[in-house]
Image 1 (cartoon, helix red, strand yellow):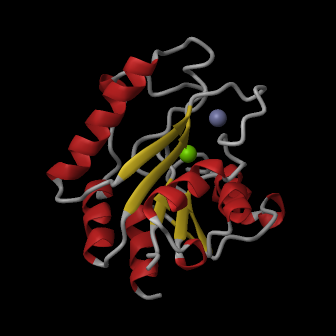
Image 2 (tube, rainbow, N blue to C red; image 1 turned 90 degrees about the vertical axis):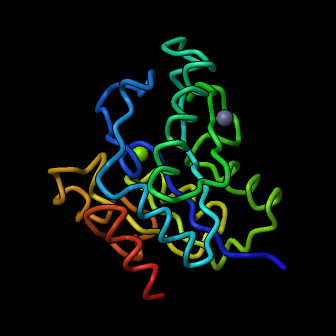
Length: 187
Ligand SMILES: [Mg+2]
Ligand SMILES: [Zn+2]
């Protein structure tokens, strides 16, 4: 029987987004307040949690696959310290011009998770900080999208409020993952 999941973008949702840069080293990874505890709450609600992230810095040669693997291991460890579990991280390491089907706004990584873990996408939620996340969620048929203002639109809520940039308006807009989890709890 397929189960609902929560998909999380990484930068700007779980950890601090670096405008115009990539998180290339463990030293550059800073978890946002409450991020690990939020994952633990989602787990307690019965949701497996997946990270769905574009990291074209690998294709651009700005970091290596080993750098990305080290950052991912640190992310899992940081969440684990707070009692949470990320079931699996999916990364697209291709260049934006490669035309792969995994790079968001395509839903390939979400579909891969659904196949691998038998997930009920229509009953699942995606939490992201960009319109690209919203598009990927829609492309894969994820039931709900929550926009958090802790990343790309931090300090610019008026831009996010211009929902014309979203092909499908977010089902909920909130400050951060903690508030997103509060909303998911009430579903
Ligand atoms: Mg992001
Ligand atoms: Zn890709």
